[in-house]
Length: 377
Image (spheres, rainbow, N blue to C red):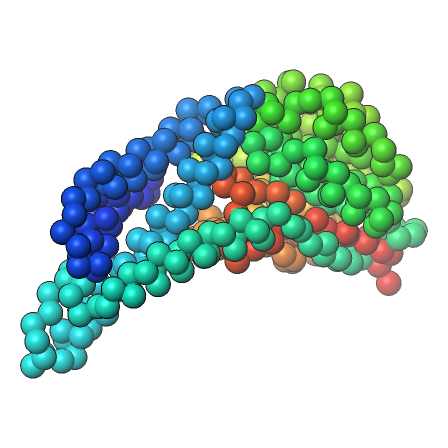
C-alpha cells in the first residue's frame, strides 16, 4: 500500500505541472515546478520516516507542518485533475462525433477551470488548518451495573503537543476541562509527539486542575522517548497507568500500555510485544464494582468484553482526520469514531483532542469527551 501511494505521488509530482501548463495554454518549462514538488513531498516523507519530526527544533516543526499541508494540497489537486480527465473521457464517449478529444488532453477546458482547481484545493487546506485550531466537547452517558452514583470522566486522548501545538493550545483545552468539573480526567495516549513539548512550563499547567488525573501511553510517546515523557507526566502530578488498575469513585479503571490486540494482530505503529489477550488476564479485579478499560487504540475490544469490562475508552484513529482518510480509516478500524456496542460493553472512540502530521482537520473535529457514568437501572 505504501509503495503504491508513493508511486502515485511521484507520478503526480511530475505530471501535474505538465497537465496544468496545458490547461493554462502555456509553453513555459515546467521542470522547476516538478523538481520543487518532488522535493517537498520527499522532504515530508523523510521527516516522518526518519523520526526527525520529534526533534526539539522549531525549524523542523515549521517544515513538518508546512510540508504536511503541501502534501494534502497535492493529494487534492491529484484527485481534482483526475476528475478533469474523467470529464474528458466521458465527453469523448458521449459525443463521439464532436471534435476529437484525447483522454489526457485538457484542450476542451477553459483556463478558469485550472484556476478554480488550484483555488479550491488551496481553500480546502486553509479551511482545514483553521478547523484544526478549535475543538468540540461531546457528552456521553454510559450506564454501569453496581455503580452507586454518577461519575464524570473527561476523556482527552491525542493532544499531540509538540510541533504544532504547545502551551497556548493546552491552556485553552484545560480551561474548558476545568469548566466541565469532571471527577476524573484520562489523557489516553499520544499526549506529545515532539520533544518540543517536554518543557516544565507546559506540563505545569496540569497542576492547576482539581480533578484526579491519569495518563496511559500511546504509540507517539515511544517515538519521542517513553521514559522521559512518563517522568514529565508524573512530575505534573498525573498518575501513570501502564497496564494497571485503579479503583476510584466506585469504578475499576484499567489503564493499558499501548499494545496489540493479540500476538497474531498486525499494527503499523507497533512499539512493543505486548498484547491485550495476554496482559488483561494478569490484572486482578473485583466482580463487585464495574470495570472500564482505557486503551489508546480501539483494538482488542473482544478481550476487554471477555474480561468483564462494561465500557472501553479509546482514541488513536482521529476519525481519519482528513478526507479521504475519513473513508480509508474504516477498513483499518471498524470502530473508529463515536459510540459502539459489543455484547454488553460500550466502546467509545474519540476523534482526538489534537492532530497528527499537519495541523489540519477536514471531515472531522478535535474532540474531548465528557463521559457520565451513571448507575444502571
